[in-house]
Image 1 (cartoon, rainbow, N blue to C red):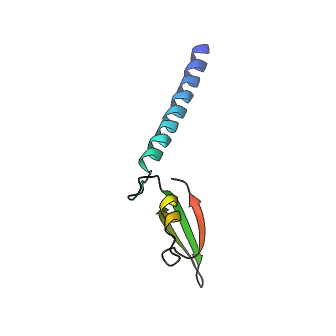
Image 2: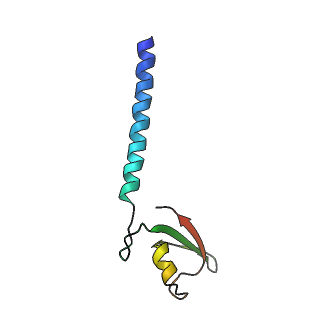
Image 3: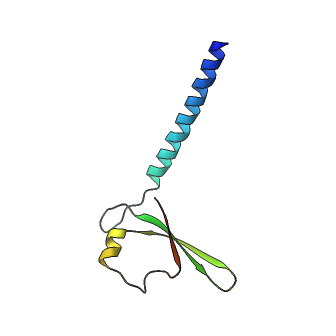
Length: 85
C-alpha cells in the first residue's frame, strides 16, 4: 500500500516538474531582443474601438529605445496593455 502511495506521489512530482520545465523552455524561446540595443523587448497589445468592432494589434516595443525617440505619429492609437515577454 505504501509503495502505491509513494509511486503516485513520485508520478505527480514528475508531471509537475515536466510542466514547469516546458513552461520555462517555452518562455526562453519566445523572448525577443531589440535589434538596435540588444535589450529584451516587451510584448504590447493596442486595442482601438472602431465603429462596431474592436481592433487589436500586438507589437514588440523596446522601452529603452522608445524613451530616446518618441514620435507620436509612429505609435498606434488606442489603449495600451503590456503583455510580458
